Image 1 (spheres, rainbow, N blue to C red):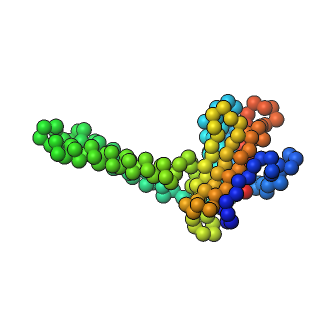
Image 2 (tube, rainbow, N blue to C red):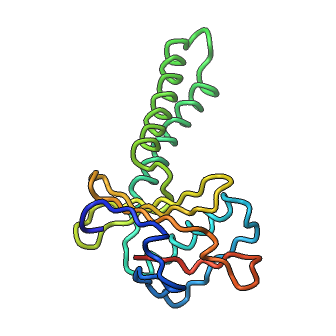
Image 3 (tube, rainbow, N blue to C red):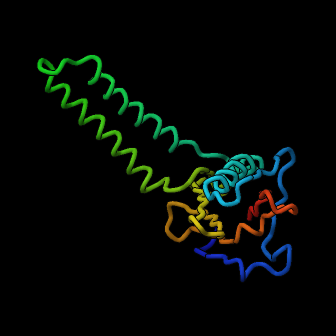
Length: 186
């Protein structure tokens, strides 16, 4: 991820079957993922995310779990406010405390929603850069009714993002019934 912003397209990068982009060997002990339903973009994206979640730490990248833990803490606070308001306060007597519980629930849920919208977006895997320690988000997207798989690496810095767009057909197994993900990790 060092360098500026770049977008890699399938047509520019593939020269023959192997392509001109450097490919990284799958670490030993990591099984390729399969998606038995090729028409389900959700299943394909889930298989790619599962593979990357296992392969990137095996390649030496440190998984950054600070945002998921922050989401868990915020939602635990929201649920605690809801539980206190539902089970421990009585309506006419504790109406001011009930209002605080409702406001607390919506406040903590809103902050969680903002973290999701502004930082996490569609990222399932977050890693730390080996050189700078910056947080890198790994986004995998596939639009409905499309065969294009988008793998995006993005950072909090606006000029530090890379995107790879390839047809999911490049990952077909020989029997054409399952997708085998031996992903391109560059």
